[in-house]
Image (cartoon, rainbow, N blue to C red; front, side):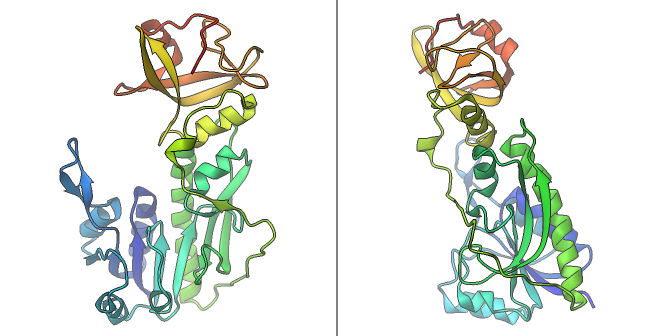
Length: 310
């Protein structure tokens, strides 16, 4: 018989998994983050992507701020669900929720655990120069991404792949993997393997303070930093344009040949010297502007060789 599933998720990343599970099981409820201010002026309350998808599916949606209220925990149990599936929900779950369904809670996590436990596994994997990551389905426990692993699917990280591109790849892989996991759970054939503690690494949330590009670092690290933060929040440098210092996001880059003082523009193609080697931004965006390929950017904003990048 199809499983009775409570689905818990919030961003676009979670939606393919919700849709995949709804095709073969009964989604009895969806939990997501409450509507947040958004729109052009930030005045309109906007429902999360998961909230919108659940409404299209005709599934009840609940948006508790947390589960400190006993009534919210009791409402969760009253759904009498077989299992809860959690994908980028955004809340830590208390023990009463973790044990509030027949089979507990299963999480779709975007890394090869125990590497990159925590909030930003996709960005951190690229920023660290990892050549491989993946999706894992694990059974949740009290720890942060420490539960036993059920299924794994590895994904190669290409040399120029950005966090946005990896995000889109992993969300589809994750949907397929969770669908397989729930089929195995329904059949009573879902294996669980404890995670090793050796190799555990924490993927801290990206802070604004680390988004500025540091050209004193080797070119490989600068390149990984740029693609790991693309498209959001975006790695950036500052450039004087028309006597005014402006922030420029770099959305794509490539490693290039050249040497010089870190932060020095080496040629008319915007090759920039790093602590070791050089990088060439290939797609850039001024504050408030649209993304531009480097040639188009330079037509409107010429940058001479010898310019120092702040």
